Image (cartoon, rainbow, N blue to C red):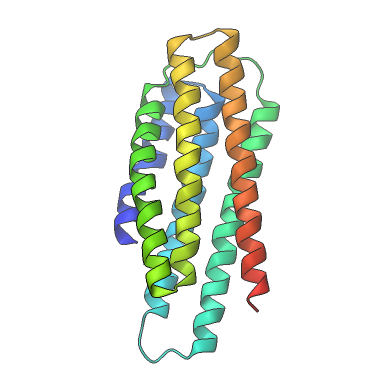
Length: 194
């Protein structure tokens, strides 16, 4: 999990820089998403380390895992809702330079897919709810990054066009809806484990 935090840490900074040179709503939504997800990853990592200590009673471990999973689900919902609001409030604007955001999103597709498959395998092997929720988070991140990559490629290929504006807004909205759906599922599962 520490490796996933280290690899995710530069994402918000690079996409934030990209916002200084570009004005794509997809990049802005991606910045909000990456920042919230980084915070959720740090909370999940701390919880994972705490619950991995020997001598912790099972009830305390379940409580910490449930709270961590609620936080991760809430972060996903917050990201999704923030992105939807940004899409709805943004007008047609010049998207500017989307290359920094595109580079981060493309690397995100690769790295997040690797983490998704790894966490899925580890979560099943260890029967650990934190790892299984991380698997869901990374699946969502992989699909979101694929959507962001597609939208930014269209913006890069046809800047200022109606297609670029449509893909920019649709990409953000699709990402937002998917994140909210995954977040709600994670929250509901955590609440059922009381």
